[in-house]
Length: 511
Ligand code: MSP
Picture (cartoon, rainbow, N blue to C red):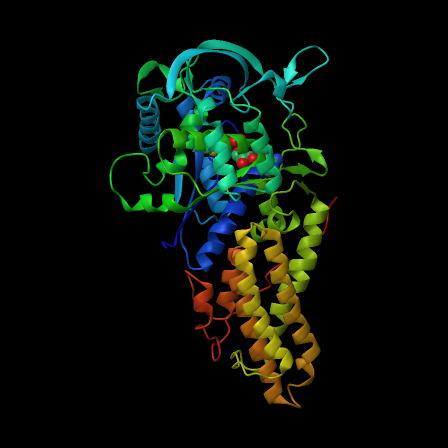
């Protein structure tokens, strides 16, 4: 079996600046990409920006600039965010790029040729915010008789000429897909919602617009532009040139692709996208995972409430790895979560400063002071020491299942059980009492502790890649592409420690 693994974030709308929601999707996806790479997979990770549609055109109108100008400016901000978040993405795709436009047009043509698209007129509700058509039954009636989406967004009534995709013909095929592949959509609660939605009956989907310009012209009719979701969803395939008839190696990644999305856009990914692909007789992704939403100190995040969280501000105030750790550890992946400064500060001080930072600081300083900075060899010094080594390999073994089930926070919990076992070994062995009285035992304890710290650096790499590299660096290891497999062959015994720096600083809650 090929060991190629392809994972994607949604592409982000460029009408506005990035916020914590974007950062969360990206960091979680990066975690999985890095973890799969640690397991030895040939990983490809794609992110990017979604640049067409009425929402973008309106945002550009407000600024009195051309849409492409707004896209260029804001897409760059999202690209910069990939660096600020230390993402390991291989590609950053923009829907205004030629390779994307070509792919989207290819899909349209295939659907058209297979008689999956017909001309009609759309009359109904539309949300510019979500770029989504709504049935009235899915909206919430307000006291004044108007309608809003369940998240409180406005909708407008539109009537315009439009091409329709025969979505209604695909209900049974979709339901079979969900039934035969129980893991196609996760978590289960979200899968059930999708199944209910499809079971309730699908209408044909309006897939073109005529009332504005900013989009990809449909290749079969110049007067229409593609519905932005049909355009955008093809980005996943376009990053690896899947939507054309040419041979190329990147296409291989399509055999094993996972889409990570927020729960608000699950329907587009788990219903529309597979229906387009089925109708075009193309291969489907392996999985769609929908994560939950963050609130801010218990309140829904919204521009109108003025409580949008800027990820860059958090990174500047608390540190990148601290932020990444918090996002991944605080909330089970798939659940909603609450962002609070208090919770962030507690996590940093207890898990990072106390558990991990102090362990490295105390033990490595001892090697520095008493052993001339030379890392001693690992000897089996006791049953406890043996237990520690076994626990690491057990952790690695269990981690695969946890991450395969997207239990990212359980993975981190497991890693911390190991970290705390190393702490316990170090504390119970009391090396500080032994440097004079029993130098052999002293050296053995520090040998095993530093080797365990090296192992910790492997385990935390997908969560906190920068901290992992800092640890490797202190241990005088120069590693780029790491895997669990190579850990066994990397010995640090005899290495001369580099300068030991604090990994994390204690923080105050300034609220
Ligand atoms: N452009 C579409 C996606 C097209 S994919 C072919 C889009 N973009 S978005 O910029 O609005 O949202 C991107 C991601 O941010 C989504 O996964 C969404 O769920 C996530 N979040 C937006 N606000 C969020 C929170 N408050 N909390 C967590 N994630 C949220 O949708």
